[in-house]
Length: 172
Image (cartoon, rainbow, N blue to C red; front, side):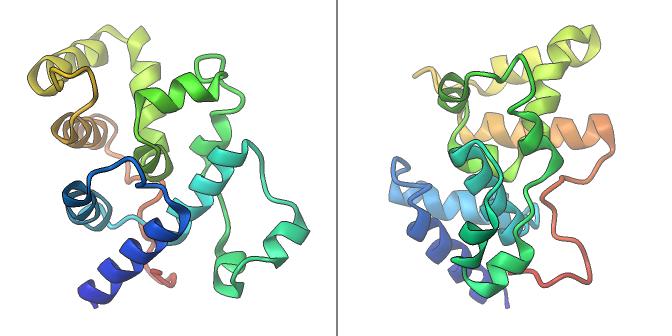
């Protein structure tokens, strides 16, 4: 089952070219150490990806052109929808440059928490520590930083991730 799910992730990511700028050796790490590890729903991920890259919800005719299973399960998360209303995130291109698109699609609630925590001194000090410990010297967020950010979000909020697979729903 895990192997089938891994293959579904890999095939889906290749189809939408979300990983086109990610080195091949890192794609496996992202799938295993993030998307599978956090039990991210493939449908939630794909819905968020579509919503973020188009900047809107899909029309009924666009949904009709989708695979029937994806069409029934297309439902962008609340956080992805908030990106378009947030003054902090109003400029999609600069925002997308700060985080990889796969992270935006899979972890939008973590990103909103990250931006909103800038005004909270306690959360801000935790994030400052994370950045110092895990920031990639080339100026890009490293996978270690992203993993730490997710873990800090979970520990701080005690929330499940929005894109987390919900029991009783078809996983992929």
